[in-house]
Image (cartoon, rainbow, N blue to C red; front, top):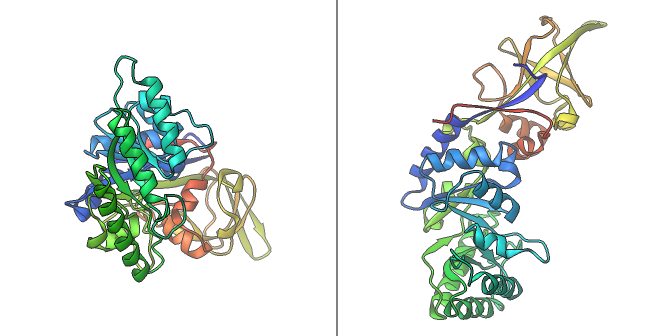
Length: 363
């Protein structure tokens, strides 16, 4: 390794996880969600690998991400969905790039229709596909039950003018309890029926994300959105990646910078700190693997870790593995999350942009 700290992203492991998850949710399709730079794994390499594995849907969250994917080679045969917009979003660029648009309100629908009207007379215009979003209880975004008929009616009216294509209805479920998720499903199906009665085309229905999509067949419908599971990070307690048939995709590596004695202890300084995105909360809880053996983290400083290596003093420059698959004796990022009271995918997302990502595999 040439860098003092690097995140190694195994695209073959990602491909394995995608294949396993597709089989799990079939006959529903799998959407790979790459928001937050694919949770720190790199949105474009992840999306391209997903497309190579036959994935037909990528969840981008924001329009800038969606456009980056299109510019980077994710072609129009792969649906790329954006759904969170700042005020005054320029929807014309989304229409030109053939990005699917999530719509949560009549005001968003009106803005998309205006942009489509401006673009309609230009060569190559294709009316954008819409994913109409219904709030079924999470209250993240989406139309309320009271506002839903007006949103659907506005979309159908724009479709009749040749400006858009109604295509999907979707929601987010809270995954707070089985009972709440069942209620969300019932509300969602009622919303789908209402949309169809108002004249909308509903070719695709999607509400389930990683946890519910993995556990519950009844909520998979036509499409399941997954992020964390694609990176080999379980989203619920009590299971390991291996027990789910998944492989962690990111391995965080560093080097030993030096060793010193501290009374009756030997302490190693490892070249990754909170400036690289390592959370301070892992101190006194998680470990680093050196030579196949775990050594506890004593402190997380800005540019290095302090690790207790009493009984085995490593050489300067020796490889240290913070988290990974476990193949070199290290903990997984899910274990780091459990030990420090956070989520594994939050840890990978926080790994700083200054840390080089080295991609391996990709078949």
